[in-house]
Image 1: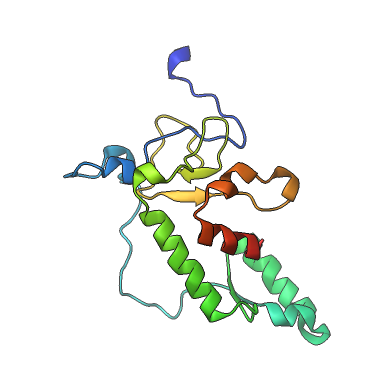
Image 2: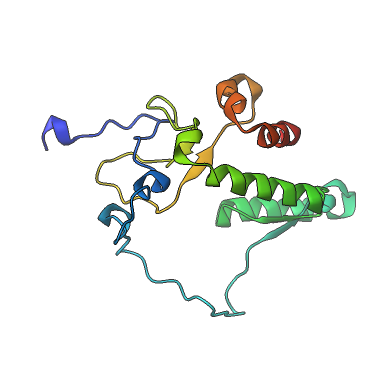
Amino acid sequence: MSMESKTEVIPGKSIIVPSVQELCKEPIINIPAKCVRDDQEDPLIGSYDPSLPSVPVIDVERLDVDDYMNSELDRLHSACKDWGFFQVVNHGVSTSLLEEIRTQNESFFKLPYEEKKLWQQPNHQEGFGQLFVVSDEQKLDWSDMFFITTRPHNIRRVDLFDKLPPKFRSLSTFLV
């Protein structure tokens, strides 16, 4: 392998690739080959099998009740270790706030390409784009994302917060 074809992998950094929104500025006929995943099975849409495990549910209120704390911590540990994600219930965040966050998030992603101003930079993985791109040969997701570190405060990139749309910024500040 020649030196030109090698990609240096630096922890916490991602190769900058065009966003889906950027690729779709012009009408496209086919999804780019880099985004086609031949190695994955098609999802079974609309099928439900009750014998399959369901997403773990963590009850935040139980984490604060002595009689339930240990069992809920065990469930949380298992969810993190075995699944990598979980659903949270009884978290105390109002439905109206969650709806407002969803609305602002949707508005943010619908902003025109030129107005985003939050694109990933070569020296950072944070921002709008694709995350964990470590190779020019890597298959890419057909999606855009926005990633920002909120805690701990000393590693937070304030410059990204300052560029968020005002209402979205106020919601982000409230949640972190």
